[in-house]
Length: 257
View 1 (cartoon, rainbow, N blue to C red):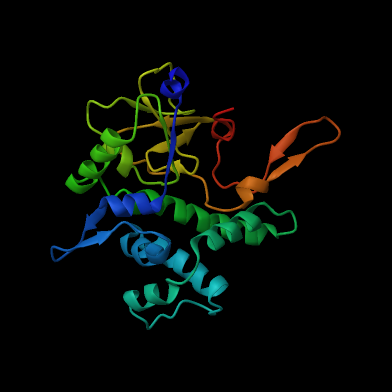
View 2 (tube, rainbow, N blue to C red):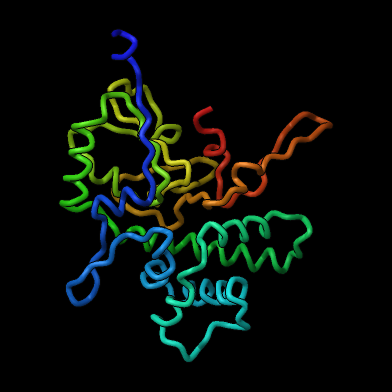
């Protein structure tokens, strides 16, 4: 019985959790748009981009390298362009960028281009996902989840860039980001976010967290398989390096070790 009482549980939540909890953003006319998942990512992402220049850069890249267009169809409406881009797999896009940003055979000119596209995506991740915040539905959903399933010192692993879960927690619920704003918190809920978060930012080799505002340049780890295989070892000095990562801080690479 004592062993069962001491057992800790790890819960994993993904994009479906934010969508299922009711995360949405208001739009003109009094309607709302639900937080994007794979099926609706480009439609929502490009609709909510804050920079017209970033939107054009991302659209041009997607049309050229994933749909085979010479350039984005200029005569098509914004809605029509988003509809054409919708089938493109998000992970394939980030894998493509990771490979080109780090492969030694890629020309410096093309690497410069793919890094520009990644920077545009990164800037807009914070803008877009920052429009989706906690609301009465998300708070109610997660309050029930905590009451029925989560105990003190359990761990939540969230693969979401958004902060719906954290912002939906009751004010009385103590929590912290494991590996980022660590400290001895024996009675607090531990939250791990291996893909980064829109309220994290890397500065001078360290990661800073805010619980109230969105970072202009959030720490985001691309959802690509390369982050699992991108390790290269040196036989001469026995050291290893990480390749294939996008915007990954040294501190974040070693978190949880």
